[in-house]
Length: 204
Length: 218
Image (tube, rainbow over all chains, first blue to last red; front, side, top):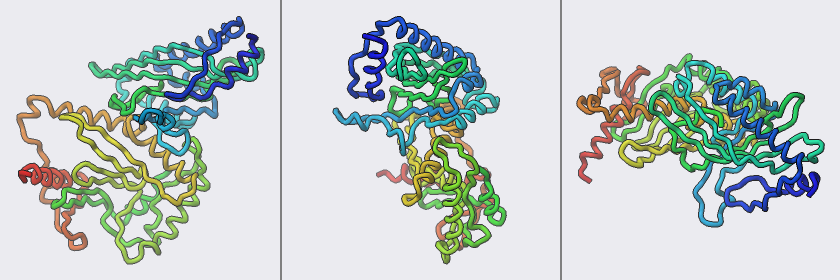
């Protein structure tokens, strides 16, 4: 399969939805695909390093002006009614539905030193895995934007004995800029219905 | 956003704690007042986009119109509405009145475990821009990911843990703050009112009702 064919077939893949039909993955057979995947992996691992080193301001600078950072609620639904499993992208509540301005405020709060839920700052570890490109328009030869899925396990230890674990999927849109890939959209699917941690004070 | 509205309303109308001891309900709000042109505008200002879809012009116009209509709509009735007031309905519901305008329901799951649900209230006939603005404001404020309530969650869960300690269990809790500073009020039949903000009046009302239910033998 050529690079262009891979790009075309994966562009048809629907957005991630729990219980939704996901077509068989396309094999990354070309060297370009492999190199692009590696580049995107490096970008996601770098971002995890920034977040785990409390470099929230540096993380913010790697986000696009028009970013949407969204984490829907997850519902318990009957068999087959999976279209209602997560809160709708528009008009519904979500754990997060931030833009650049509100992410900036989250970072300001984390940097304030008087944010009790993060004072002292938590020890955080982002484990990112299962990185897979699902949309590469317009073609691998002239990539401007990619959609990438990943799995995350994020561990948070606060104070002495307080532990939280956030596990789920992400679907990101990364946009190529002069120097790097900017995060243009992040959808976070936390695999919990009721949030079992007392709060979620960190960026996923 | 500015607190312009509440400062104006509060200027003439200091905060009052009200409890209905027979029922166990309580509210911290202004003393009930007649709405006039002077205190009609209790709405916050959204001067620049903050939420993802914010349209401050449409939102601002909506709340200005609401303020302009308020004296006529409220004629002959008392109001206690301010930019923000908080209260509780016995036994497990509480609310914020304006921004955020939410209803919380506290589900007892097990000893020491409570599950909180929060319902966000928007005006049914408001334009979509106003609903989006309110929804994004509520999301940023409330819940385990809310900028404000992230910190509240710490308090709520640690105070639960603190009540389990041997010393905490050895002594009765003290709810004396503001005791004897309360009074009956002819405008609010059945209510006990305090002009102190730092009073435990509403907690005394809540736990008195709780104790009556526990002792009723039903």
